[in-house]
Image 1 (cartoon, rainbow, N blue to C red):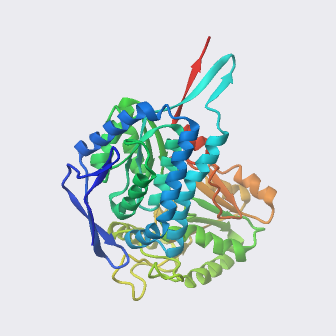
Image 2: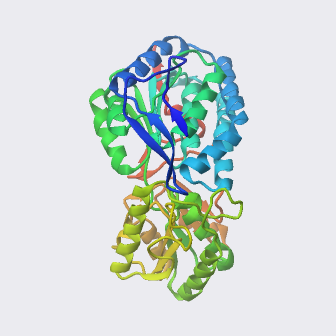
Image 3: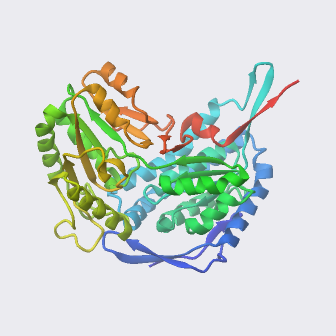
Length: 471
């Protein structure tokens, strides 16, 4: 049983003023594996005060000093990747492959920002003026439970590189993972107050961070619904907000694509991270005259996936994160059946022999139309919606027929054609014939998928304010 009863403020692990205790549950077996004591507004204000005091000196640090901080953060996290991997499996239910990759990436992010820093000019001439890019101030980092380490570290690395101090509020469902990360932050030995970590609920800790006038920026990953709440709360103090929000990614398979490769890759794009990914390609758009082929390949691909114990190297899909998430996905599957979609494989209920945890059957529907809930709303589970188009232009229009615009996928044998289609899709990223991640390219969304970008130069500049010196 893991007991987490300390928070991290001003370089020290301290007992929180808050007294609410929350259970930590292993989603594979639906059993309590720990408890975390949650912070209140008083704890949050103490963390903000520590970050504000530390900013006075840290904002004056030079590039060499920040590079040293980033290097030590990388080194400290890298040593603990095996523990972070195990915690991610047990606390969240990520497959062993996903847990290893995501936590390794979290460590490497700090090295990537070292590279960004080395090439970045914090002072430039524009017109006849000198423009300095200065750190914003205290940055509040709020993250979700589906990618704990990576989501925290990409924001923290940018903030440190920019010279900002931070207050981190991870998801209370990720407290074991966050505790290990926090111990890494402590070992990296940055100046006291530069990094502060407070466990707590969004309606308490998140609200205080969004409204407190001593916080200059909110960097948030989560749902669009919550992102809108944070933006409203932040407006009174005119905070900068960087919001990485929900998605409903289209996956456009053009008629010249190799369907034997593109369709299995599309299933992977939908079911990655147990289907709990804002970038999941949940809308599979295929030529109407190839639907029969698509249905067969989708069935064959999904039937070959192993659902079960995420510690097993052969497992493709683990459990959903919690009971609420399980119930949510079951509701979407039921609604699709009620609205007339054709169930190809999967459906409601637990997979055979997996009744204890929050496992769902990997599911695919054909005959999905644009007005169905599963076509319009973010399911956040392994549920694929197959939709058909007649022409390339119709496919583009269908891809853009969403309030979201985080990511999209295009498959084609003709790269120039694929690029032409990609250029017409309203999304922050479009992946052509690949599922690859480019850490230095900006990540973020169009429309209601967010505001701002993470990663690379544009990610760094979210934490900087330009000042023109005119003589």
